[in-house]
Image: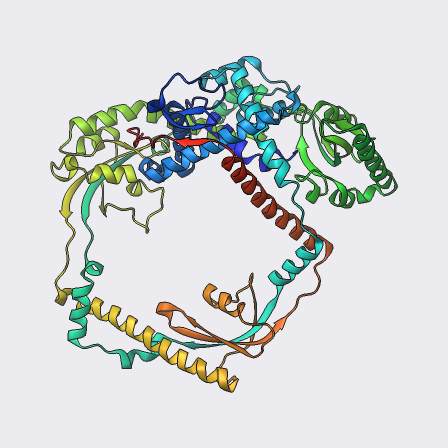
Length: 640
């Protein structure tokens, strides 16, 4: 609960959509009141409609999130398919079902939790001054740029936190018995001693020489394998902000002026680093339960007082904060306003290595130890000079790009028969390349020539038939590209004689792999009778986590062998790599896991079990809900 980002992934996705991406509307905050008939609705849950407007907003949010993640490789058409639209509707339905359950259970979120969540949004955290307070004017302006008010964001955060309480309460209740964790850890760490015998296809080449008739038959049956793809030789120019700014370098004087003008951004609040042990108490707990939790916390506090150097070990053993317990209770560095008020007041009253009395908050009882402290101050110019110079250079790149982007776009369109005018005006180099309709795996995914929007524009009729420049395509990172086709080659199937050698290679590879498999299978039958080790290689110990270079198919086969029958034999078809036989000599049981490894295994298994429980619970909610899907929305026209 205190390791916010790790434990609230869904909420952080929402924040990313709100503050990294431009102009998104709110979805699901105030609800929709049924102003539309079913033709304007995509689904309903328990009589409450999910409107097409809500779907469109969620789809825009999804597309913008993918655009941010994929950058220049983003292609909106990949996400605007019938399957993706159906998946999105299913997600909206599940959100609505969860919201209904939240309301039925009267789940609420305290103001302190909402505030803490808001302070975890990077864009808001940057607005906090040395005293920990948020610059209200800047905060209002930030939200206004997203079309929101503080009240709307507060409602969104409260909504998401309330919905997350259901899944978190289930997932955190999962429990893995030590016996099960011990057994599964032993299985995962078990090693097996094996020897291998390989049947390499290359050994069968003399036996696999095909006749010309065989080659022709293969060619006739597999002509598509030998087609040359459609391709185009192109000229292209790239307008890039960083390249435009390369000739300029901000001076130290510029950086110092920026530092002086923005000195408040370099002030640092006093911070502390603290660890804690938490004994949780539900808000609606009975007095008896509260007393029991407090007694347990007091008992742990007594142990901490007696052995302060063992605080981390006691936190691992006793703390009920899943975000910090496995780190010895460490919460990292934080300033004012990051924690709930009682916790903050107690923590900032301590000096390094001091331990608090019991501190009660909305979450339960805390035992706090401050491990380090930093006083308030101001970062020196030398500390931030490099980052300021980088910022100024980026600003200059953006400025130059903004100045030239529109004129460049207009010129490649108006002077559609040549790229030379644009190259001359903007001092660009005309480059050449050969491309196909699909991205080239030899290039970086972010290379402009691999951008799906660019390739679509390049092979459009205006460029392909009319030989015009493409439009200036925005491929991200302040980069525009325009190209023209100088020579085009359609899809073609070469004559047999031209690809005869390639056909031979394929047929030989196929025949040698089959011969290797036949020999290997025959030899396997012999070994299963004789139990011999003749011809096998040096024994090696392999495990599920350490394959010692063996292929995954071999590891799977080896660990399916009966551990009680040694020697055991198994054959593995390796496809084009031939065939292999593995001899199982011994099964090696690992020593019992130590406390730390066992605890880690219990936690991982509990997380998996908890997620399965959550999915089962959500599925049960859905079966009890009245869900109607009216229609799938048509593909969006928005591909920007």
